[in-house]
Amino acid sequence: MAVVIGIDPHKQTHQAVAVDSTESELARLEVRAPKRQVDQLVRWAAPFPERTWAIESAGGLGYLLAQQLVDAGEHVVDVPATLASRVRLLGSGRSNKNDPNDAHSVAVAALRLPGLATVMAADHRVVLRILVKLNVDLARERNRIGNRLHALLSELVAAGITKEIRASAAQAILDDVVPMSPAASARQAMAFELLEDVRRLDGQLAESKRRIAEAVTASKTTLTDVFGGGRSSPRCASDSPATCAGSRLPIASSHTPAPHRSRSPPAATRCSVESPREPPVEPRHPHGRRDPTPPHPQSRPRLLRRKISEGKSPKMALRSLKRRISDVIYRHLLADADHLG
Image 1 (spheres, one colour):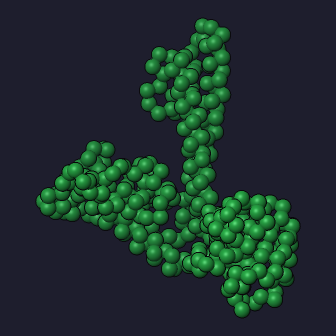
Image 2 (tube, helix red, strand yellow; image 1 turned 60 degrees about the vertical axis):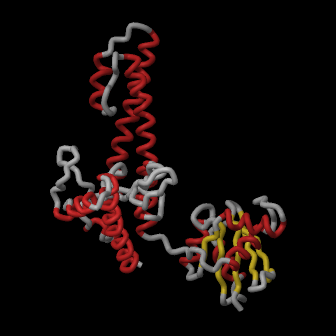
Image 3 (cartoon, helix red, strand yellow; image 1 turned 180 degrees about the horizontal axis):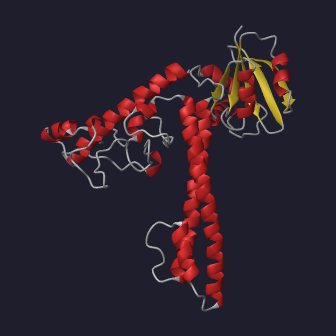
């Protein structure tokens, strides 16, 4: 008999409920979260040989338990917290997370939706996700500190720094500052402290990029074989390569004959192999100016010229080229999924 075991994980305890195909509860167990939590759960579930473990938020609070069960050879699926909450709401009229029947709701959700994501053992993808998240957090912190330093320099020196904050330039300006008041002295002291933070974060970012490059190489991905593809891991908040590249089909407007995009994709959803601000292999002059004749044969302007000759605007033609590039990247992602497992 196929059995689904729903688990509501917590820091100190885990609640497990086994249900059959009729959603009837067969057994219930509450275990503490010590080192041998998996052994206790597996022994308790021994009477159910055909079992599937459904863990709420297997990528969050239930991550460790889910990975331990996978390492033990168990079949584990991830139940999103919102889905379990809906089941609780429909079953009892309450969506309170502290409901004692949380684990039962998780099991019922997994039973009703067999297409839930299967939890896999942590691999290179998890490593890259961890490293990229760290890199993003460091970059945001560096930007925040840089903005504070920029504001202080503007209060100490006329015009401050007109370009991006760099440690060497900020050091040179602060060394030339002669405080004329206690407030200026306080600002200069604070600016020196922020400058040390900037140097520290610059070093951490450099180390983070090095570790990402090593992890990408170790993953044996074929994405780096794409022209313009570097070893910096892409940042993308969407699962669609076309959405990441900003090349989704335009939305037609009811008041204009020409289709247009409803809005530009936010910076967090743009995907780039080298830079999060630019699509990969975009036609660009070596000195930064737009060039209608890209230098590399893989980005020849034939497609652009053909699209423009068909009546499309230069931006729409460029979007078509981006879409072709995103298709190439997607094919490499599929190939990686096949040979990396």
